Length: 88
Image (cartoon, rainbow, N blue to C red; front, side, top):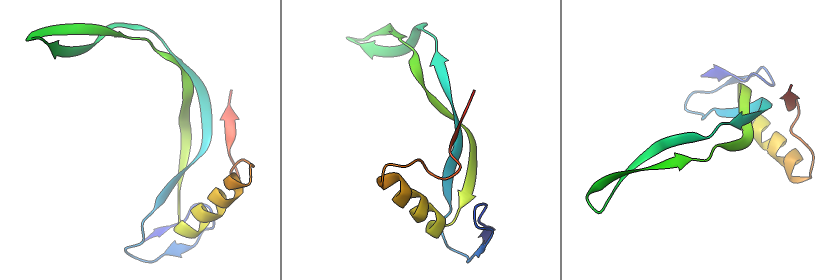
């Protein structure tokens, strides 16, 4: 049993919880030289991790199945989920 952090209702036992991201931020990952080690032809080789740009979760909430389905229906229509914000 747990309490949905979106609607505030108590969810019955054996009901799966869904984590919903409510805040994200843009993140730049740097180049990491020789970060990946692997074995090829019996020898240990290393390759670089190129890094890149992406988004990472800042805050998540635990919601019930009903609230998660409502949020996903809104996303299917082309709108953002309720409460989704980007951190600066």
